[in-house]
Image 1 (cartoon, helix red, strand yellow):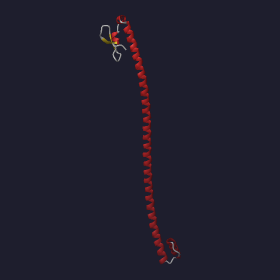
Image 2 (cartoon, rainbow, N blue to C red; image 1 turned 120 degrees about the vertical axis):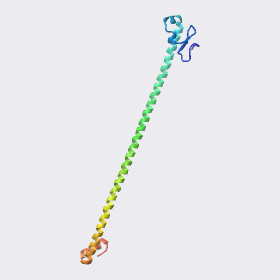
Image 3 (cartoon, rainbow, N blue to C red; image 1 turned 45 degrees about the vertical axis):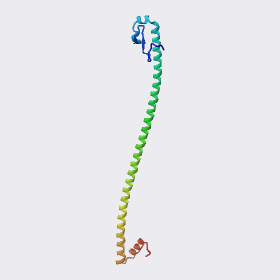
Image 4 (spheres, one colour; image 1 turned 180 degrees about the horizontal axis):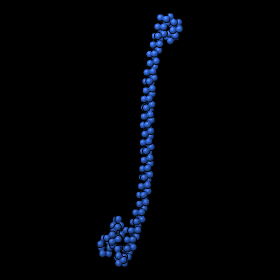
Length: 151
């Protein structure tokens, strides 16, 4: 590149010594006629800069696509983890609910067993009275059988 161009290739020093942008420097046909070589170089430099920027744009677009793909992958992983945690919460809820239901059922069964044991104790007492006061052989045999004794 020549010394009259800036680092970003967007300005040029004209024949009058004034630094201007390309579109300002070569804005009339008279300017191009007075400096055809400079106009050619300016067009060539702008074309090279455009090609360079297009390459950078293509690489940036590819990087953006990779980042978007990575973001989609991370999102799907996060959603899968949230779904898994949600399912674990549900399974823990169902386990706790099942355990509570089992405890309730055990409490009902325990109450029923206590009730039946109380009725059995009254029946045994009634059989004992029958065997003592009525001399009932059947009551005596049933009472012995309940106690696990031989009549």
